[in-house]
Image 1 (cartoon, protein in one colour):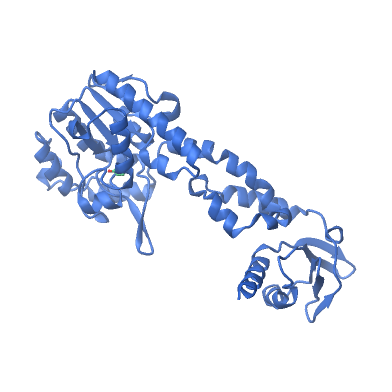
Image 2: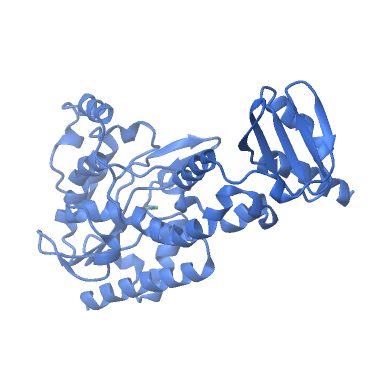
Length: 370
Ligand code: URA
């Protein structure tokens, strides 16, 4: 039973990992691949390649035997050796460039990747040569992505925004003079199209007398349903870090740069999408109102989107984090990473280090408040 499963897995891997290289013989273009299957699966897998690459002439060379397709007949031959297969061709260079450019460091899951693409297969996969470097640079690229501002809105967005700014919504248009008015205004807001797909607007919460305001990016899936900021997984990371830094969340006014959940459906899930600069700018109306009404001494911005909303400029989160920044309204700003960034880090050591840095930044905030 176990063996049958392993054989079937080896056949599946062979279908996924055979990489042909272009060669030429007296009849013209042909393709050849060297492959080392984990079991003797060449005979049962070759018909798959025959169906898939019917119009090509190809050979698959393995240590157990070879398969040849000439466009009409599938034949099997003796075992081969690696040096009988052609060396890297120019198409391989294109493939590597494509693979590297589609590699998303934010989605890196090393264990899953190695489960799918067991290391034994790497030596014959051209793209595998790139993997150690891509994995090693993933954290740096992730940090750069976290620190980068959202792109400017495109023309379609600007048009939708113009269509959606209704003048006949007094709650949404009047300058709010209380947190209750902010709440009403956010629920009536049409300043950008994000209200359309969200369950509700999510305003800040916390005491009006709070000396510390924490600004996140936007409500997530759970916040959108609950109508309260930072109650999901990122909220739990934030709560724990605040506690370790000696800050009581019940003393803090916690809010977001953008008040509606931006997402796209993926099956039954709603996947977070980063708000763009136009959406952040539209929602600053509400954040600025919260700032005027609360008048906090210190404002912490979690991540690049919050930094953009609080500072009114593109922040360099990793360079500027943890130190006091003068804000136009007299408050002191402090930039740090977003707690979701800690949740996305692939390995425990990187997560621990990033968490320690996050707690250090929040401890510096506690000292500023003292
Ligand atoms: N992430 C945020 O930025 N804000 C929330 O409220 C929840 C998750």
